[in-house]
Length: 110
Image 1: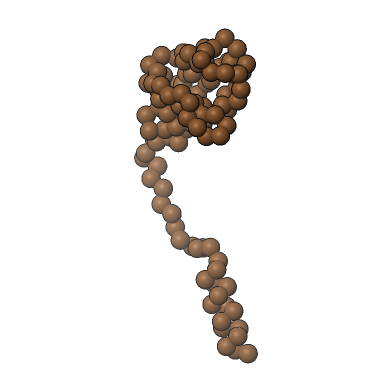
Image 2: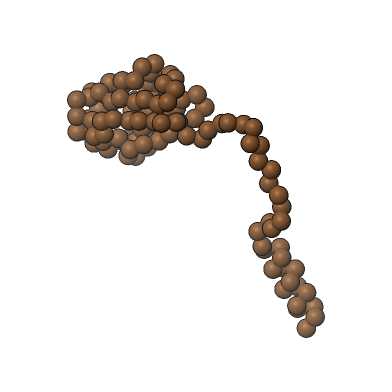
């Protein structure tokens, strides 16, 4: 009986998440995981012009994918406007990259 109890105790401890391990977080770094104040408008797009802005308005790499995951458009923009007039009406996935940070949004074109 003692052996079964010992084996049960060992397996129970091994299967538990690591409790008591400290994780040190460096609070001196100010890196962000999201594009600050990202705004995409209008959505849905009607006139073929998409406005993309952020807090720092740095150059952005834009990729547009269809719902099957096929990349159908890619460009880099320096300003805030992006011409998507050649897209057919539908639902798309918009991937925006600014510096090393990226964001993904749903885009509707009418």
